[in-house]
Image (cartoon, rainbow, N blue to C red; front, side, top):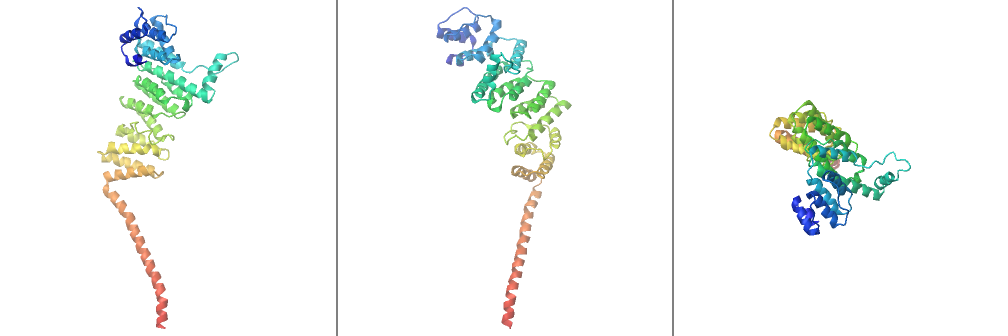
Length: 373
């Protein structure tokens, strides 16, 4: 296990494993490495050729029971020389068959029925099985996706994982790593606009992962500005700002504050104040103040927008942000506002004193009349 984890060079790994297991051969380096591990764990040795090693390594990485055998499968997938066309096609096939076909079952299909019960029965054990099933495949495919140079047409299949499995059966970090690796291969306007649209459509229905929104927004902003990219950015940001299930942390790292000013305010105008999620927007508003600090004109536009939002909803944090904006661009206005309540309290105090004097007069007057008599 230590040798597998600490050795990066395949020739060096071969030498170390041969010394460790006592098994030497004149096989190809990659076949020799995998067979040394199989030999050490008393497994059947691989007798195929180099061409079949990719499929075999994937099978080991996803289905082997022993951790070391699984590990050598992943090592092969990370280092095995593969043409990019072959790699993309292989990933596409594996993503298409990510989940076993257990739908439309008919009598006599015991194996498919058993798979369905094992993974999708809804019991505690089946949920655990499904979690492990997704985890190992997402982890393995991520190793391959990171090697791809050409665009991987499997973003829709990544999103389908969220649709097919319940939230508690999804290993969030591993699926996210796979998703980000796939997104990284998408570089053209057409691919990124389509990916953004699919993301918004899918995430409105199922589990929300705003790390994807950050990656997509960043990639779209790096492209030349066109009608399509502007529309995609607006749609993505409007979704993020109006999604009810957003928390105070959801959009902190998304990068909305980095959007060009003209596009930013154009997008904000389309976000209806009664629909906006204030918990998610409040941290974004703070970021916007920092970004726009050197531009009083833009800050004034932001002040107007936040004031409009607060006219329909109430949020203490957003009120404080509004005060900060006023303090930067118009401190006199803030001082005037702060003095107004004081004046009203003073006038209220004067009215109270007048009332007390009147009452005192009313009490004293009868006594004085009695003395006079």
